[in-house]
Structure formats: C-alpha cells, structure tokens
Amino acid sequence: MFSPDDFLKQIDERRVYYFSSQQLNTEDPHYFICITKTDHDNLMAFVCCTTQFEKRAKFHEISGYPGTCLVRIKSTPENGLTKESYVDCTRVFQFTGSEFKTKYQNGSLVFKGSLEEVYFEQILIGVKDSPTTDPRMCTIAEEMIKALYL
Image (cartoon, rainbow, N blue to C red; front, side, top):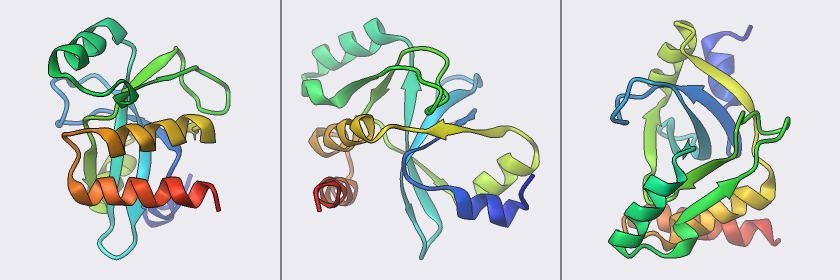
C-alpha cells in the first residue's frame, strides 16, 4: 500500500479508478477515468463510466449532442472494467488532490487499471466536441489529441 502522497503521485491520465462521488446522483461507486491532472494546482479531471447505454443515448439524442460524445469501452483485464461501459463525454468531473487523499485513506477509492489508448483518444475527441465542456478543458483535450500523434 502506498502512502497517500505517493498514491496521489501515481494518478495519471488513462488510469481507471472505482469510487463514489457526491457529484453523481447516487452513492453507488462508479468507474472514473482520469483525463488530465495538473501539477501546479493538484486538480484532476475525470469522466465517468456507465452501463446504462439506452438512458445516456436517449439523453444525447434529445440534447442534440454529437455522436462522438458517447464512447463505448469494452471491458479488458488491462482497463479493469467488469462490463462493457460507456463514457458520457459531456460531463467532466473535477477533483482535488485532497479529496483523493481522503478517499484513498478511508479505502473508498481503488485503482482498477489503465485505459487503452484507442479509447482514451475517443474520449478526448468526445470531450473536445461536447458543447457542455468548459473551454479550457476543450483546449486541453485538443492539445492532448495532437500529442498522441507526435
């Protein structure tokens, strides 16, 4: 087991974690994928996985969101997902390092695996294309997509 500070240093893009968040409308834990972490202010951005495809797809259709904003991810031993899941790229969740330290210390946050690059790229495209994404996050996603091809 890592110290809380060492665990925080291990958090990085593409990593999959399982935890509950008050930012969701449920206390049930979900799989979250880290899309970026800033060192200067210890702020992290995540997207959340769901298995409720029909519900999310209907919401996206009614809202007129681009098709790129709902990404399908197959479960693999590498990513640690237990079922085929979907990422709603119109919702980006931000957490602080102190929030993660607390979750880790009380055992309510678990590292599950690392997301394959092909899915990560699709998520970044979905975040960039989302009309609800903060403009700064869109810029970060766009820069990260470009970096994948360098």
